Structures are given as C-alpha cells and as structure tokens.
Length: 338
Image 1: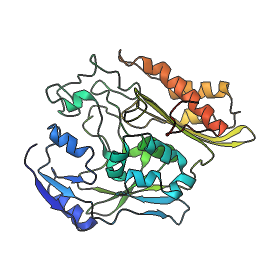
Image 2: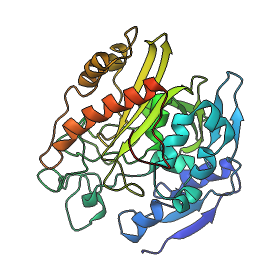
Image 3: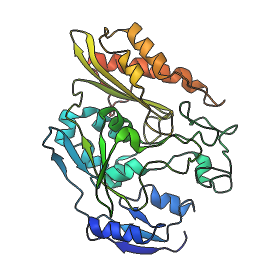
Image 4: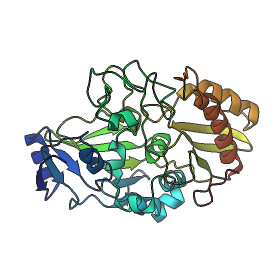
C-alpha cells in the first residue's frame, strides 16, 4: 500500500473543506471497498478523510411520510431497522442478500452507493481497463466476461454495478442528498449512477468536493407485494449474476402499479418505464409478466461467456413478478427459490 495522509472530520462542513482542498483525497467510513482497492494499488488517494464521527447515523421520518437514512447508517442496522422492515421490506431483503454479516456491520449506506465494480480486470493492474486507466482498453470484451453487462454497455466498458442495496433503492425511487461548499443538492436515484459511455471511469454523477449526507425514501414502499430475487454462483457471500427487485400494487388481481429493477446486468441498476407501463392495468398473470420481461430486456446483448444471462434474466424477472404477486417474497435466510 502506498503512503497516504490521514485526517478526521469533526463535522460535515469540515469534511467538505478537507475534500475541497485536496481533489485526490477520499472519504473513508466502513472502508469495505476503498481499503481493498488501496491494497491492490487501484486507488491511490493522497489523503484519507475519516468521516465515521459525522452525525449521519439516524433513520428518521420525513414530513412527507417517507424516511431519511443517514449516510453512515451501517448496512446491518438498516436492514434490521423496524421502519425499514415494516415499510420497505424489499430494501431489507436486498441488503441481507449481499456480502457477509461482518461486512454488513461495517459497510455504510453512502459507501454502498459508491462501491466500485467487481470486474476482475479492474482489480488487476497488469491488464488494460478503461475504468481504472482511461484509454487503455477493455479486457473484458473478448475476455472472461461471465459476470458482465448485457444492458447499457459500451465499447469502452462492460462492467456491472455490484450493489444489491442500490437495486432496491432504484425500485423505491430514492433521492440522494449531497452537501458541498456551494450548498446542498438532491439527486434522483435514477440519475445518480451512470452508464459507461466513453467515460466509464465515472461511476456516478457525484462531483468532486461533494459528500453524500443521506438517502431519502418516498412513502410508497410496496410492503405487501414485493421480492428481491438474487441468482449467484453460491448461496451467500457472492455477487449477483442477475438480481431482480419487484414491487407491485394490486387491486383484485389487477396491477395498479408495478416496478422492476435489475442488478448484475448493467453499469447501474436497470429500470425501463415502458416495461412498467406494460404491467399497469393488466391482470397479474404469466402472459403479462412475459411481455413486461421482453420489454425490460429489449436491447440486451451477450459478450460470449455471459450469453447465458439473456435467458437467466428473463426467467428471473418472471419468477420475481410471480413471487411478488403471490405475496411470497424470496427469503434471504433460506435461499431456496420457491
């Protein structure tokens, strides 16, 4: 690991001042991704700014009927928080499907949003990678790309976003709250993560000098008809090959509102408004679900070793919609798929 300076922030204003003074500095909270990247010489911050003492560890009701989650709330605490379990169970389920209990104890809400791809070429500094070294090429195209994207990729990058929590936050249409020297701003979750395009080194729309202070959830949480279905190579401590978050509002077997978000298939959690419109006002049955899945996967493309994801994703969408319609969400303690 290279030498670096260490600083500790006393409050949010101090953290912003420190990061604004050193554009190569990085914030550290749980450190579950950044420290690994520093050990592997992928990240080389000159200064690491410890933000663990900032007052951003609360889960609070908002005046509009939603919840605000502080950026430093640990993933384990968030998944088991009574208000999350009761009102946003799809978020609790998604978090519990990821990592290990030890990692969830350390990982923070803000850090989860900023975790970087698990593409093995990104971590291997001996290989070209446009995300790690812009302009060097993409080794995954034509290489070992079993885990890689089938939607929204570019000629520069086919990496996937690794988070489970973010798939649920995309479904719930959360808002990311950010602080900076010029004032606070709010970013709709759909706009927070980027597709790779020709600048895959940028994972999000967070600008230099900004810090995530919290995530706000709107009132609608789909507490009855929801599921988070994750398919992976082993039953725990593995990243998704494909994951699907679904939330349905039903009235007498008819879909009033339906949302779907995919993980493991793109550079960001993947949603398609047209696919969700295909559910609205329709009976919650297999034929409607199949049409919606076809729309959601429109334009999907394999890169050789991940061609299997095309069929796998469609099957997962159908299964997840069926689970949600039945009110029988996927269990993350007993992972056998019902």
